[in-house]
Image (cartoon, rainbow, N blue to C red; front, top):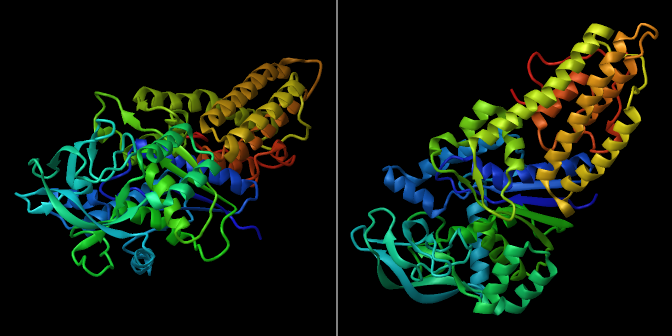
Amino acid sequence: MNTPVWITATPPATHGELHIGHLAGPYVAADVLTRFLRAEGEAVRFTTGTADHASSVEVRALRHHRKPEEVAEGYRAAITADWLRSGVEFDHIVRPRKDRGYGRWVRDLFSRLYAQGVIAPRTRLLPFCEPCDRWLYGAHVTGTCPHCGAVSDGGMCHECARPNDGGDLIAPRCALCDTPAVAKRCRRLYVPLEPFRDQLSSYWDMVELPPRLAALCESLVEDGLPDIAVGHPAHWGLPVPVEGFPDHRIDACFEAAAMHLFDYDTTGPLPRRAIHFCGFGHAFCHAVLLPVLLLAQDIKLPQEFNVNESYVVEEGVGEGNVWALDLLTEYGSDTLRRHVLQARPTGRRTVFQRDRLASARTELDESWNSWLTRLFTAVREECDGLVPQALPGGAGWSVLERRLRRGLDDLREAYGPDAFDPRRAVAVLDEMVRSAADFGHVNAHERCRPTTACRHLPALAAQLAVASALAAWARPVMPEGADRLAAALQVEPGRPVDMTALAAPAPGTRLAPPSGPVFGF
């Protein structure tokens, strides 16, 4: 059996619930690709984890006078529930505080890299908050990014994706008490990237990076690859397993990169293809640190990157109105998945607008569900609810069939990993449904012709064939509605996105349409 395609999505920090920007970023898109490949018969392993040891978890715990482990566990449960409700189905979600052997595995990897000289001690300036008596790193410190001028946490700027060393931040302040930080010398453990210059450059030349990510990597090389802190004096996280650093914890970015390797056994056969989905602000961990961890172990893994920009909330929309749970409850997974794929922030920042989410529901109701309701009603009234004894046909059927074939080529290209474009997939599906609805309206008049009996039945069979195809073709985008449609037509769910799906159910099959809408609710 071939080794599977490996698809990963960025592990989210468990300091809060998922919001619509998370779904518009890596998670739904990665699920679409996974579902398409599986329908094609490809072996796929789809994985992620939760960044329970992120510094933002401890900051939230301190602000609300809770224990970090309580915050992490509570939000981890909420996040995984939101994934499930939105139809994002992972093969494995790494749970840092639950998965057996995880902590030991990460510490062993850290120790090996230290022994190899990949990790080395350095003494640098690090912000310190005197009122809190706390070293400031990660989410504990806020300031201005020295590279792009954006507001940034310590360690990584999520605007330009370039690392900083905490002490590099301009005007750093304590995130908890807002006191200006004092720079103090601190001895920590680092991964110096400069020794990997040639290997990383060759790797990036081999990988087809998205343009903005390629620009980031080339800039890092041009400016001199930095040393990346992989440990901090802290109370939260996995202990650094190196003598002389008793109160230090492993950095969350290092752990997020290593987490992917824990989930995929690198001692066995490597995947023939690895595709990472991440937001640009997290791209450094995937495109720089993860390859270094692999290269340090003499593992050459071809990787591809599907990078999204930020999906931000427009002014005037309260944060409480954009949580995934609330929107899934109000709109359902079909509507929300369809919307975030249409609005996916590819190549540029996108602003969430609730009226466009409402428009996605309207499109499903007035186009998709309206056509299917008319079709099921016609079959019930004209054929007693049974698939007619007729071959697909009707006025314009040959034209519609050719259009569907051409559309299917576009759809398969948009679903495929080489030209992945879920926004295009939604547009193609919409056009198919509108064409089928127009075909149904035109041929409905055949019932009124007194000279030829049953002339309208081939058109019903043709529309049932299109509906059967959509149960397969739309499933990567809207799995809940597609499976509901497959059940109504009594056809197998999860079929390949190809022309074999364009076939009406067997004549005489009794349809079982749902009592409510097929797609959405």
